[in-house]
Image 1 (tube, chains in turn yellow, blue, red):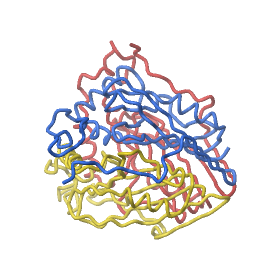
Image 2: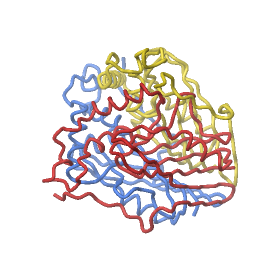
Image 3: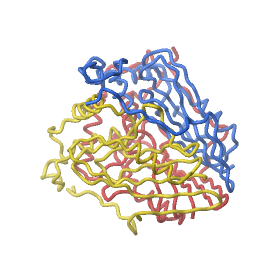
Image 4: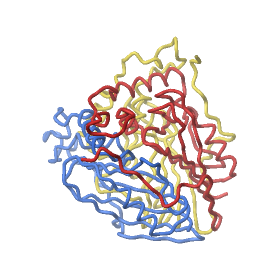
Length: 167
Length: 167
Length: 167
């Protein structure tokens, strides 16, 4: 049984900026870097995503947001200090950091981050969001915010954002 | 520390109906309103989504379903009365309604709905689905149903549905 | 109260292969069958999805992966033997197989698979992924693998994979 994780290798790394146009359809992708300061931290990305979409004056379409990391999640919820504390507490209670996880055991794992809890918490939240664009803006409810969950920080996290639609 | 939640404001509200066409690609979005009667209720939206897709005679593409609320989720599962009762029980057991959540504490939160449990349950289920359309119909397995989880009803809930593809 | 589950019926079953082209946009879908050998099993589909995408020399776009089953999930995580054992243990601890679920009770359910736990575990992981394609390849981080969770095997599982974009 190997202690190592499988590496995912593209033939070429993801380019910083990539665009394609055909028959009125535009696809445009970029990388967004977010710096975190805590081990578990919830970051509000809503304004970044809204500004990205407005920049393209795309009328109708989709915008995809993808976390490039296994221990960094994306999800929708309300942004209120009290609720963010509840969410962090909930994640910590759902997955015990100090349980006897094999991923944290040097006999079975060559990962020295001891972050099994981060992987399992990410499992619950997921790694991507596919949002609608309509009337030139992201479709979101009044209390919905696009949140990133840093689950093993502090780190610099790369997110890929891609817009896809008709101008 | 603010007791309030951040509000998401588009420059214009989402329009009831929005369409764009270019080079054989069609994008069409609408709002669907669902009225619920219980605090926690599971609603089967499969027939609504199937009828929406059939209405556009779009051959291949995607259909995105988005809940406009933080405490109303969308997910896939089997629709059977016994299993729905199990799902509700599971959600109630995973997140205790009466735990000492800060979001329910007037000292820390100006939300008077006392619905921290609803926010945390929605975290587990997610707020959107992006389904495939093929041969003019939604791609779903024999036992798969598109379900909405009302987690803080009764309420009127808005869902946005957008179809995206080639006729 | 019916003991049966609602069946989802398309007018025609999903075709093995479906393609549409218009104005430089290509949409192509296929079915992928995965055979599992355990009741709970985690399968790495990354190479299959990467090869599918490379086959179409599509430059920018999206690729959607959809599990056609209620008890078979798709998610992103790291692929390491120790961590996979932790993920299985976590799913087993989060949802007790032998709790008194109604779906497993012949008085309330005509399902003879006794698999309420499988349905509830799938609820946590979800049934689909919508990934970005850029520069002709799937956008994934170095440690991200596309994983399928068999939650009620052994079975033959059908996944639908659809690519959508500009060549």
